[in-house]
Amino acid sequence: MNLKEYILNLNDELLNKLYNDLISLDPHLNISLEFTDNMFYGNIDGYTSGNKIVLLENLDLDYSKIILSHELLHIYFLLNGYPNHFYLEKTTDSPVYIFGEYLYNCIIHKLIIEEQEKRGFCVKEYQIDLAKKLLMNVENDKSKKFAYVITILNCELICGEYKKIYRNRIQGKFSSSFEIAKQLYECALKVNYETINETREALVRVYKKFDELLNIYNHKTLELSKKVAITYLPDKNEYNKKVTDIFYLYSECKTNIDGIDQWMLISKKDDQASFIFISKDMTYDQVRNYLDNITIKILYSRYDHKACVEQQYM
Image (cartoon, rainbow, N blue to C red; front, side, top):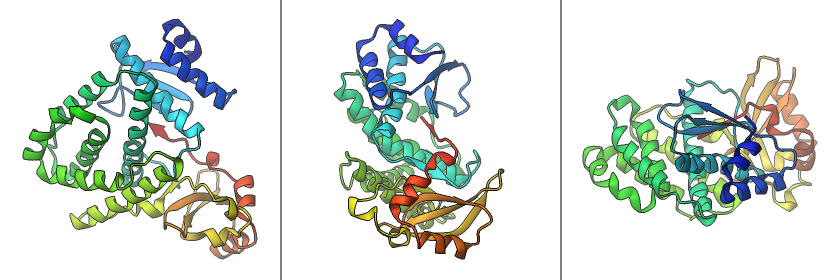
């Protein structure tokens, strides 16, 4: 379904304004819209994959408009240069991908709910619905504690005054999960992130904190800081510096189905994976020597993350 036609038919001023803002950022943007009665992600109402938005069928119209605006704002923030996240390999059963994706979405969801409110969307029903769903999706499997932790974190970041719906029960019955989520929440909001750089810094902090908490609770760490690339925006004075002045090359390499080797470049500034470099039939030393002889400007002009798999946003 053509999204533009769908929004025009809704005759909704706020959605029209948001859609036009997206087109002003990318005049060639072509977003499709689909409806489904079976969300493979579980208890969610919509998601975005590339330039396709998928919404749950039979939602109340006003509620579906809020979900649609949420998905459009995922695209909006990316078009405005906010951080994206990338993986050497994306498999739906990979803990690195699952938790890297969920944590990324939690951080971005705070920005989205704030932007919805600024634009005049009424998010009250959405916030209440999320808070009630948290009570329904209780932690019933100790092995899934950290998945439940992230569900709590998401609600803590976006439910506003409606946290009161679940707080007492969750704090009482699932105190350990709530405490872990609280630590992640406080870590994320160490700075009330709003800008592009502040958002990247929040993601870096939360990824590191999540691995730290996994270790404390005797779970295998995921090394999210090394295995999830968060978009790095170079400072103006960094563009003419050698790549190896800004990044170091991580030793692990993944070869995709097309025979392309993918290498993580780690930021020396915050020790976070920041760029995926692609090569073919090059050893670690050859890649490192190559990077030692090109600038950040050349790296960013010759290579981009579009070579990597598309991510999905909820």
